[in-house]
Image 1 (cartoon, rainbow, N blue to C red):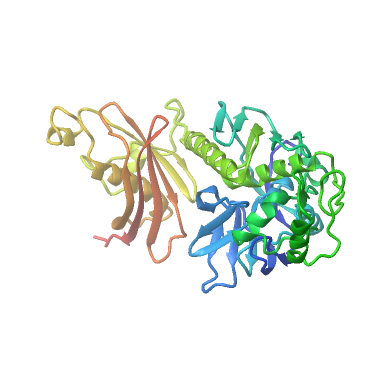
Image 2 (cartoon, one colour):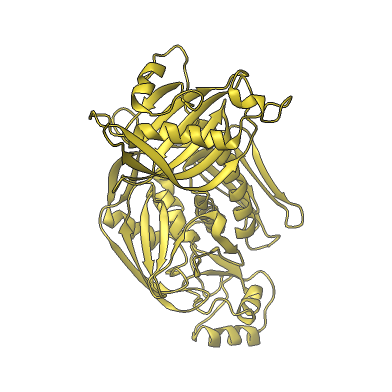
Length: 469
């Protein structure tokens, strides 16, 4: 945040190395967390696999939510990402690359505290690129009647979370936790450890989970009567000789860091799972009996909502009262096209990488005479041609007396999402994807009518100097 109130993206200042065992796989893992470029987000790279595939930390790549959150993409899997993801969000780290040499993020002490301490030690690096927050403009709800889960995201000017847990347990009872500001995250939420019930341990072990579990990296709640034989069996599994059950119902007399530490840890999990939305957003989250499966489903609903908002925000603004950068006479001096194939009327914005142009569709267009007579629809191929002509302002050199033509080499991922009819005003947006090399120009094109996308395509063209007469 600068003095004007503008928020900027951040990465870490120095590389971090963290090692430990995964709670479910039991594998020893080393993570090297490195700075990353703006707008890249959080990415995991499996450096132990051929090709070192990358898995983006995104809810679209969640494949499993059994006791933890697992991502998979490009043939690579990374599990138990929630505590680390919560740490990134809690410490406001937007971009980072995590090189990891195993399948599971280390559990450490079962909380996010050591991750946070490492991030604090590494420091933050402001990246000078704006951080765009998305606001929830109506309530987003998720419920699971079978599991009695209720979650809601309410419109709010900051990021705030309230959680409630109720396991019908005489030991835990009903617990609440809240986070009003991320400035409180490192002390109030990060130290809170994962927990489970004693009666779940044998099931977890039988299902090949918690191979790296230890009574020192999880709170074990004993809320049902257990036999000495059960305690002895668990003692052998954890290689402990002094396993005991305290009068408070916590295994091994482990002292809670907060009276409501389990509820605070559930809040930690919610933060980590919702970080997978992939977009910074502001809302008041209320989560009743949350779990990884419900968190992920809720995150998908939030992401879908934000994508709709983002599409609206990405629509270029066209003010017909504003003088264009190029009018039709100036356009004719740049583009080689003429009636009836000149399909750009104005250029309203032009940078080194983006051009925005206007095409007004009239009933008097010559193509309407033979294309669907009585049902006037602008041919899709001419919409793409209009995009290409707009792209010419990015591709054709303007500081020379030489004349140039552009020729299509390739059109990919072309989608027509809505009809274009007489009376429509097409807003043509072309974005340069890579620097122009050897006359080859790669661009992404989008056509808007109002606030709706009607056409999308990726175009590759070649710039050719016209021979002098």
